[in-house]
Length: 146
Image 1 (cartoon, rainbow, N blue to C red):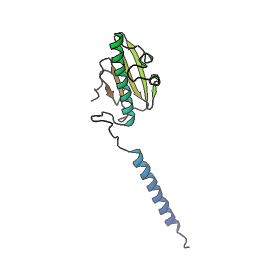
Image 2: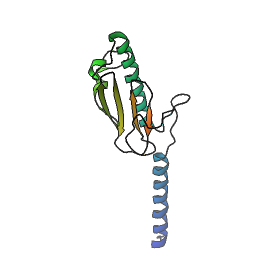
Image 3: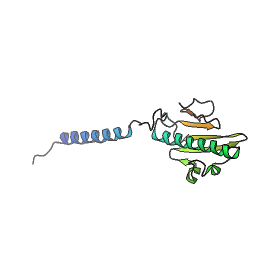
Image 4: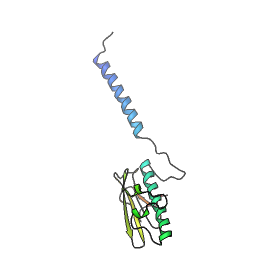
């Protein structure tokens, strides 16, 4: 068997490294696949956060219809609509939930652990309009999620 020269070995190692780096890069840069027509999410993490917000908003609307007021805690929403006991936990994947009761409503925020274009912060209140911001914590003045 012929011995390879050090330069040939170096080329083989370099090509192998390129192949590995290319396969890792393509796996990390997958394009988000929308979950439904008009899905405003930019990533799977955002889709989960927005889904959670929709569930809380619907539960709050049902709770208000039944009790003539909004729930003052997430725990009060358990078994309202599809809100489950597990949903009272504030750590939700890449996001942290913040819920605050107000005299005539509530504020719900979803804050990503890493704020970037694919992990925007979200805000909603009793008006059921979701807002998003990719540069700071979202609030009622942030752009509306379309």
